[in-house]
Image 1 (tube, rainbow, N blue to C red):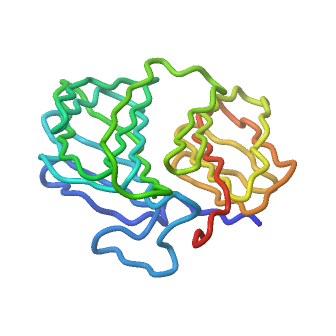
Image 2: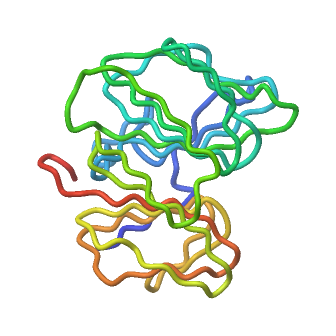
Length: 223
């Protein structure tokens, strides 16, 4: 089964007056939707746009795997475990908040910042926080998030190029840029597909496209 969610269906959030614009794919904050709480391990897929100088002040997380993909600009990250990094396009950042961590996310650059941030529920709660940045992750290289039982695949597709969607109990496709075809559906930037028990599916680039594809199991309680 394939369920397509369009970019315009996302919940609008953030603080536009403070230079923060957010688009939420799942129930988030005041935008509560009991029928859209999660898909597999994925509990958030947010498109964030920060103006120069804008950002999220120090705030807490716990028992969440947070994976961030920068689309444009530079993201400054600082956390209570002592990490301070600048994350750029092509870099993948993961913060395992585990038993609890606080962090700051800001646009300290001169231009706009756009990033996609995805939150996953862990298989077990607690533990020690962990942090990692993979610089210049290669196309097609899977990135494992074992704490959530999930794999992330980055795919960059030229016009007409095809790639297989993982055969999995749950797969989630988010189009970062460009456009792709999945079965009979055309997906543009910001669109997503939630795939249950898919087999033999392909993505075809319709223009230079970049996609984030989650491969997930069917753990008890996941919907």
